[in-house]
Length: 276
Image (tube, rainbow, N blue to C red; front, side, top):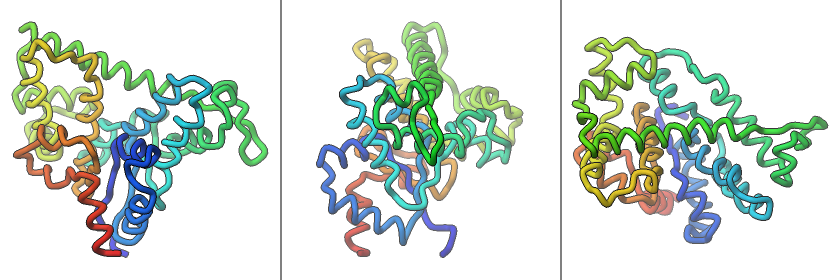
């Protein structure tokens, strides 16, 4: 089959709604069949983080429930774990190696495998998860802390914007700052490539600048907005489509040349039903 088939990534809502029954099982299975024949599927580390954060922060009594959301995310065939958003852009746009070795796709795959084999949170924490005759553990707190730090820094940045201590970025300064964080040369050519590859992410950033002006908007309580912005980095791959239930992502990226690759789950379900 052609490797130019679209590639879908899901946000956290999808797994949660399949688990709760808001997405009916027969509809979920229709989507799985459609993707297995007409598309490809990837799991971005941002959504993995959100699910792992639920496991890390949850108690023992809710371990099975929290783990099973990860199991749902892992159901589609041919799944491909994707690295952290900035490393993904480095690799796809600039053909540079992944820096965060702890979050390479092969390592993420092993983490998920260990978590899904764990019967209790205690087994996971103490390294007593048995797979193929060997015992494993999974220090998911490392991934959780990495992204938790990113959310905190983002909230602090927007609070400074609100107080007038920082100036809003221009497209060029935003791209240059991102290139610096990715350890990529800030040439004019690279700035142009970044803005083209991350057009939806830039539109989302502009929408958040508007939110920063509203005194009633609490950035810490809406920290998931930063995670949503990170999801948009994966659109740097022109084959990737983001599937979500969150209409705010589409609203905040209106006018982006990538907005047609931000799809509501119902849109994917309709496609699945008409081609089954």
